[in-house]
Structures are given as structure tokens and as C-alpha cells.
Image (cartoon, rainbow, N blue to C red; front, side):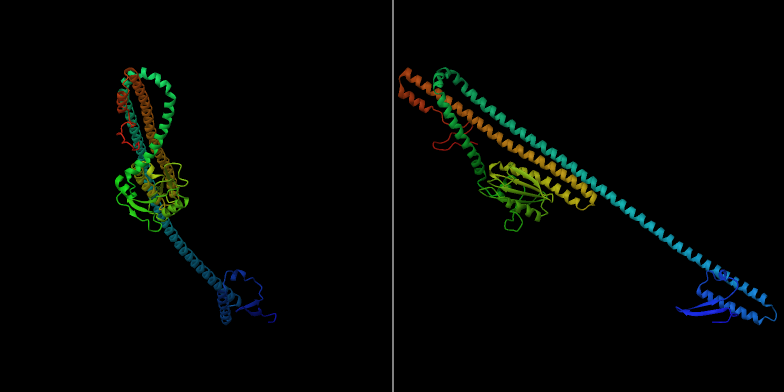
Length: 466
């Protein structure tokens, strides 16, 4: 500690620096405001040096004048230091501003480039959407054409059946009209007496012919195919080319082929009872394993397929947009029509499969839009295919009904003719008394049971009805 006349009161070393206390009458706040530690030390050094210089020059100047000059010098030095610091700070701020400005411009250029890229991607997406829309329009056109062709084929078959039916009726009517007109009076009495017997015989005969007709339809179809292998049937009725036998491979179905660029798998079941759901599950699993196949066909040759027997042909879609066709009782239906139906589904299955595959390579929003359109197309296609299979089943039923009608009419006419001839023979016997000769002629002229349009069956042979 110093005495009362000394300016320095105390000095302490703290945290690597000195903390000093001075006693003075005037405030030095404005002098040291804004000065750092080093600047303050410089200021003290200058002030001390100036004061010592002033004391040395005390002979020529008074103490007050020297002190005032030194204070002015200190103030000038302080102002110069402050001006230099301000200039340095301004230069630093300008440099930082130019750096920030350059970074902002560079960021703006990058943003513009990114916006241009996004616009180009948007143009590509719009082009893909337009192509998908064009594909859907083409699919609708093909479905409409298929519907028109199926309807024309159906109308032509019905017209041919009606024309054939009318022709047979006209021929029989012309053949029997004169003979019936001449003998109707003679046969009327006997017809009344034997009406009940004829009715019972007609019922039994119609039932027998119906059973034989159903059996003949199945056996005839099998006879035509000769129990051929599925590959031979495809070679005979289609232009698919050879099918690869993959029945010994794992998860590969029974047959594999490429039809007009579409990979197809065929599962064949030669069961004597209903095909179980486990086989259907295995078929679906095989299709999922072979994701490159756009069409899968499950065929039961003799029986129905479990949970797929509501219709002759059942159509579904897999999770990977693969078309799945299930065919019940293959040999009980027209084989050529069935294979033609499968062939007509090849192009549709391939287009839907390609569209679904393309939707997985676009962004999420467009993928959702394309998938919704594909699902709509699959629903429409499935409805149209079910309608076509209904038409095919209707054609078969109508054909069977026409055959039954012709057979019943012929049997009824044959019974009436037989009854009329029996009455005529009895009348001739009663009038002429030549029983043996008349019997011989009557026996030789008796009618055989032959279906119209067919050759007479040999004795002991079964009636063949198509």
C-alpha cells in the first residue's frame, strides 16, 4: 500500500494479469472507453514516457503546458487508433458481405437447376401418363371387338341351328303329311284305344334317349379326342407351338410355353373326384414363384375344382396382376372352343401384366393413379370374360335342348306311325282274310328307331345321338 500523496493505491496479480487501483481527481472513463488490455498498456506506457519527457523539459515549459500537450497527443493517438479500428471493422464487414452475396447467388443458381430438373421429370411423367391412357383406350377397343365377335358367332350358331331344325321339320312334314292325311281316319279309333299305352311308352323312350344322349355327348367328345394328351390337343386346335413338360420341376406347374410373347403355365389334373383347394393353393404359389408368367391355366380334365365350380370357366387375378383361368370338366365341353377362349385371353393378360409392371417404376403419385386404372381394367376384363363363358355354356345348353326336342318329336311321330300301320294291317286282315301274307308285308315295312339325319343302326347296336 502507498501513502496518501501517491496515485497508486494497490496492485494485485489475478488470473494471469494485474489489477491496479489509482487515485485521481478527474474521470478517465472517456479516455479508456473501448480500449482492450493491450491498448491500455500501450496507453499507460505512452503516458508515462510523455510524463517523464515533460519532466525532463520542465526547464523550458511549465508543467501544465507540457501536460496539456501530452494529453492532446494521447487523445490524437487514441482517435487514430479508433479510426483505424473502425476502418478495419468496415473492411471486414464488407468482405463478409461479399462472401455472403456470392454464396446467395450460387445457392440461387443451384435452386434454378433443381427446378429445371423437376420440370423435366414432370414432363416425363406426363408423357408416361399419356401412353398409359392410350394403352387403356386400346384395351377398351379390343374388349369391344371381342364382344362383337362373340355375339356374331353366337348369332350365327343360333341361326344355323334354327335353320337346320326348320329344314328337318319341313322335310318330315312333307314326307308324312300325305300319308297321315290318308290314314288319319282309319287310325283314329285305334289311336283312342291305345293312347294311354303310347303315352307311357313315350315317357320311357324319352327318358332312355335323354340318358343315352347325355352319355353319347360325353363319349363322342372323348372318342373324337381319343383320350389324347393335352399337348396333342393343343397342337391340333391351336397354333401355340410345343409346350415344355415341367411336371418334374419344382414350383413350375405341368406345362410351360410362350404364346405370342406371353409366358403361360398350365396345371393339369386327371382326377376322378373334385380337385381339392390344396392343389389350387399350390398353383397360386407356383404362379407367385414364376413372376415372369402373365397367364396361368388350371385345367381339371374330368371333375370340378373346389370353390371354382360355379361356372365352367372361372377367371381371377393374382396379386402380381397375373391372369388365372380355372377350367372345370374339360372333356365334357367343346375342346376347340375352350382352347380358343384361352388363346383369346393371352393378349389381354400380357397387356395388363406389362402395364402393372410399368407402374412399379414411376413415382408414388403416378403409380397410384396407374394402379387404380389397371384395377378398373382388370375388373372390366373379368366381367367380359365371365359373360363370354356364360354365352359358351348357353350355346351348349341350347344345342342339347334342340337335340332333345328333335328326338322327342321324332319318337312321338314314329309311335303314331307305328300305331297307324298296325291299325291298317288289322283292317286289311279283316277285309281280305290273308293274314299270313299281310303280316309278312307289315313286318317287312315296319319302321326302325333311327334318329333323323343318322344312318340306321345295326341290329343289337346302341343308338348314337349327338
